[in-house]
Structures are given as structure tokens and as C-alpha cells.
Length: 276
Ligand SMILES: [Mg+2]
Image 1 (cartoon, rainbow, N blue to C red):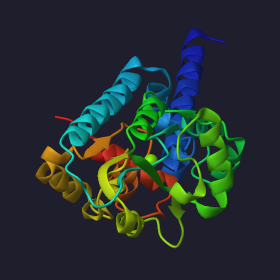
Image 2: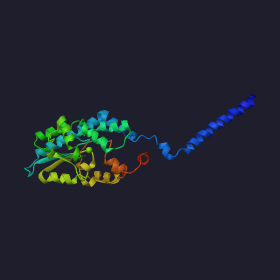
Image 3: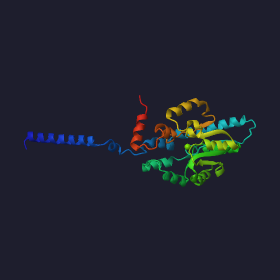
Image 4: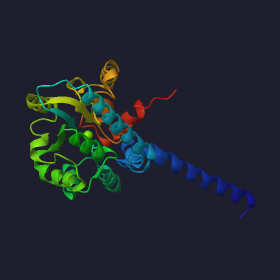
């Protein structure tokens, strides 16, 4: 083959290669381009943080150290009150660490599936959040009762109590356990405790663990309410960190809608990241 013929052939082959690349990109639908997004990929950093960072542990200790200080202060100033004193606490990511469940979701690249959550609950392997056990044992030693208000479901009570008893939480029995029945909203269950006890402190990782004012609200509304109640945090309300999940995501970032596709969720998350 003559040199000029070879050059022409090479140029033609390069052109074909370029054309093939262009047409492949043009034919990819947005769905195909996103089809490789693993549904829990975005949560890997948060799960690693909860499982491995000293900072997570330090924040948990800080929360319970603060709770103890406030409890001591309250009891020192306690005038004879009519009702026995109680602390109301959430369970998940407040006293029990469920990050291995989130790890399993990442391993399987699986969004929330009720059966998977039940599988984890029935394993009864959740470990205490750092500082939680010591604090609740201390509260009991000071004569303060502890009520567990959780959105675990009633059918998960037995496994939950067995898990809590195995690691040593006080008041781990049905009388002190108010699980989700007809609603995940906790106000009614707090009112039930208030019928017989004076609630002196609430502990949780989700704003709805504290007050109905935070429930079903947008990010902006939640943040405005937090700002307006800033004096109560670290005082009557003790907050644990949870960057993996919570109303901040479902009600805030995802705007309370549960039927987004995974592509829409990915797009919303990226759109809401604040840059400069
Ligand atoms: Mg929780």
C-alpha cells in the first residue's frame, strides 16, 4: 500500500472510532447514564464516621456527660414534686447503634426494606451508643425512671427488650417501652408518660423525639424552630448525632415524599448541596 493510501485508511479508522463514541453518548438516556448509581453509595461516609471516628464517640459522650450534669442540677434544685421524675429517650441511634444495619444496606446496595430491618432487630446485636448505658444506670441510681419511646414496631418489642437487657439498660421491660402503634408521631406517647410522671429530660437523635413542633416540617421550618428553641438544647433536650438517616433527610432533603425514584433522589441530593 502506498504511504498516502495508508494515511487515508488510518484517518478513516480514527473517524469511525470518534463517530462510534459520539453515537454511544448520544444514545445513552439519562436513565442509562445513572443506572450504575448504587442506592446507598451516598451514605458510606456517614456510616464510616459513626463506626470509626473518635469524633462520633466524643460527641456521644459529650451528650451524656451534659445529660448527667443537667440531671444533677435538676435533682439538686428539686422541690418536692407531685409525680415521680422520668427521662424519655429514643432508642435507635440514641441508645443503640444500628450502623451494622446501614452497613448491610451498603453491602447489598439496598434501600430501606422492612424485612431487612426486622432481620437486624431480630439479630439482637445492636451495641450501646457510647455513654448511654452509664448515664441511664446513673439516672436509675438517682431514682429517675426511664421511658423508651421508639418507632420500632410493637411486634419488635420482644427482640428489642432482649437486646437492651443483654447489654444492661435499666427499665428494659414492657411497662417502660412505648413503641409505634398506629402512628410514628411521638406526642401522644409522651402525653401518656406525662399522665403519671414528670418528664424532666428528653434524649434523641431526631428532632421529632423532642416536640411535635418539629414534625413533618421542611428543612427551613425545622431549622427556624431549632433556632427559636436554642436555649433548650443541652438543657431539657439532649441530642445525639446521626448523619446516616433521620427526618433531616426524609422530611427535609427529600421533602416528605417517599415515591422518588433513585435517580430523582440522587439528583435532589446533588442539587441541594450548597457550594459557592
Ligand atoms: Mg432514633
